[in-house]
Amino acid sequence: MLLLVKNALFTILVPGTVAFYLPYAIGTRVHTLSSVGPARLLAAAPLLLTGIAIYLWCLWDFATAGRGTPAPIDPPKELVVRGLYRTVRNPMYVGVLLVIAGWLALLPSRALFAYAAVVGAFFHGFVILVEEPMLRRRFGAAYDTYSRKVRRWWPGRPRRLSRRERAAREFELPSWARVGRRRREHIERVVALLEDWAEAMDVSDRERDRWIKAAWLHDALRDARLQGAAHGAAAAERAARDGESDTGVLDAVRYHSSGYAGWDDVGKMLYLADYLEAGRKGNGKERASLAARVPRQRDRVLRKIVAYEIRWRVHDSRPVNPLLIEFWNSLNGGSGK
Image (cartoon, rainbow, N blue to C red; front, top):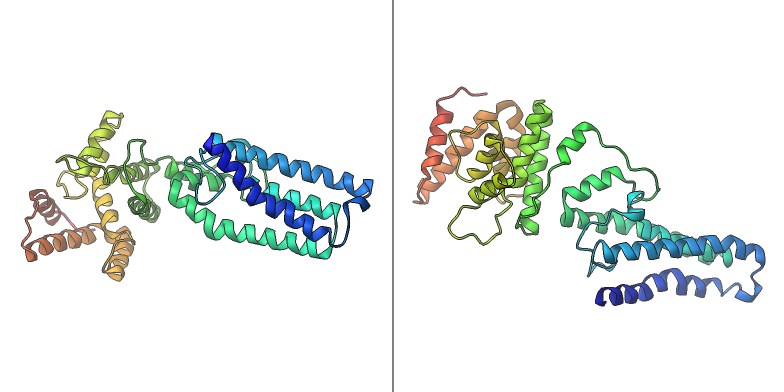
């Protein structure tokens, strides 16, 4: 009930002002409603009624599927992709613009035309600069996939993603994940870096999928309150209970913070991406330089990072995990790439 009240109040205050009060106030400076003839009424009615219907349909989906409101301070808790949102990403704005177009057909004037143009430009700028970045932070890969399939303003059938696009984005944080906004952003940067490397190294789709899957899982429980268990090990065990059977992926997740001599390529690539993703603080230029070298000199970069980690712990009189030492020894005994 409270959600319906909040949606009703928002509708009265914002769309009610933008799509009804202001166009009426501007239009009636030149015309009066009593002077409107049948021709204008017939031209305006379909636009007004369609715009209102679109807005109300979207409002219902926001409340029932998204469990939120159109207000930025109380947005949907779930990504709304049903109803009109299957064909266009911003149908609510389209509905409001159709209502304004209806007023323009009913009470035409230069001032009202200029108002419609300003509102349209504002909507476009707000969507690109504010709303879409916010949705990407909130919903991550789910919104990324949606935005690639459905156009921003012009309705149409959803675009079919290519096999490579589907492979890169079919994984997401599991339902049991416990991550905050900053942790999610870190995970997404790790995923993006691995995607770039996979393309540069021309790895198979199957191997690329393994890297991406491990990246989504590795910090899935980083912000959970765990009693004594390492977050990587806890995430690997939970993923295994959910049916993940790829030992390489599970080992990559389990030991991503410590290193592991028994890793295959998944563990090594995740370790590199977790360390070199651009959002980490300090040594930004050096990290970027090392990240650029990975596709050509992966193992050299890996040895350099592990050596740095060991020296840093020794310098600070901190214990060195025996797994890290074993990992270093396994790398040091192999050939560089």
